Amino acid sequence: MRDIVILHENEEWLKPLYEAFEERGVTPKSWFLDEGVVPFHNQPDDAVYYNRMSASSHTRGHRFAPELTKLVLTWLESQNRTVVNGSQVLALELCKLSQYAALQRSGLSVPRTFAAVGKAQLVEAAKQFNDWPLIVKPNRGGKGLGVQKFNQLDELVAYTESADYEEPLDGTWLVQQYIKAKSPVITRAEFVGQKFVYAVQVNTEQGFELCPADACEIAEKFKITTRFNEHSII
Image 1 (cartoon, rainbow, N blue to C red):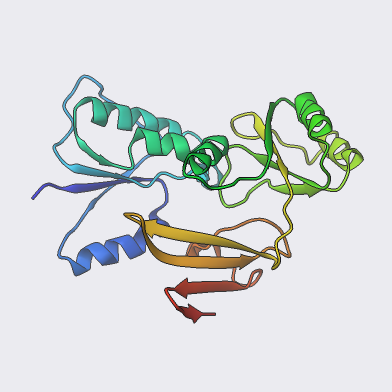
Image 2: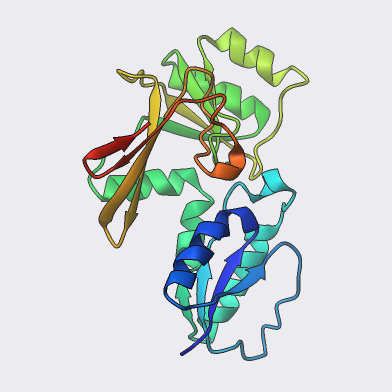
């Protein structure tokens, strides 16, 4: 049996995964990706590589972990190794606009969106968008970080001129239609092999940040509802 190697940058997220593997008598290997060397002209081990890299790695001090993972995946795929969540999946993880395009290709509606690079272009995009209130978010983020709602142009301009302004990680802002939901919650659904597994609902009355992982410790801030099929745990 070939080894299973998990590519990641957050050990906390892997604890349930390790437990699931242990139940099946399997001990996977951990490949922590933050800094490192990719020996492109060498042969990688013949193993199954499972990519668990996250777009929010920079929030845990691992700024270039996705870039390193991209190099590793390119190396593994060029050597025809078995990769789960390969380079195309990573590219999708790191670009919200690509995610919206994928949803559209699947026949799902997405909010009206403009993309802008640069502080001045963010303001210009909002002027052209001209649908208030609107949402401004980083194209590459994770957990809902940096998502803000602005009711009018003056508010956005004031933000871009304030000390709180921070460029997105990839330099790209998304200006997006604000859709007020019937209930103030974000629903995150998880699927494996196109089969629904569960959904998590997080109350957004205190903001847009969504991190259902235990390590985020958001229980004190948000009401979380987890649904397994027809049963609910609150």
